[in-house]
Image (cartoon, rainbow, N blue to C red; front, side, top):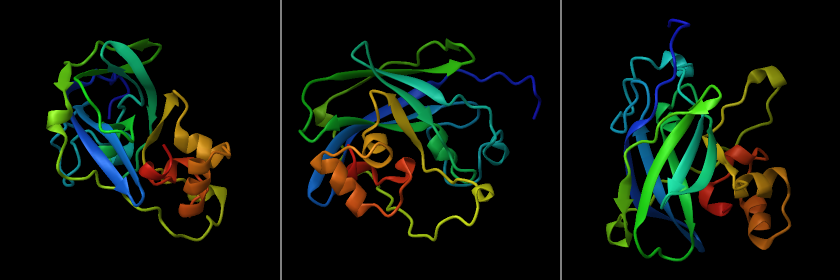
Length: 200
């Protein structure tokens, strides 16, 4: 891939309200998908996008999520070499109470030292809550890595602003009840491998 490639702005934003039910906790949120580079919101599990380059596609990693014209989150995305859907998707936590009213959602990416233009604005409301749950992947049960050179295989990303609850629970050892519960039910000590609904 040419070194002159410049990260493009995200476009074709899709958004819908979903919920997660992880045992005794139910969490509502907004599921986001967008187009970045040659990776679109309808990209399937195979084949990879033409510019994927085994996970080295120069897609932006830092995004801002805006709800109702206010900055809601600044997000840093990680992705595995084998999962291109992690490079153009995000979950916005809305809490454990069924949301009311309309949400106007847009995102933009950081390319270099500045942000790209915003995507299209998507308007969603509670009447469009999906009847299906968000798919939650359970943490992997594995032996400790034999060496630092073995390399990380992170799941996705984290909100930098406001501080990710996953980071607070696992990395910062937040003493709150729900964070203690997240540490109890998760086998990994890496904050980015927390079951999403267990640490919010």
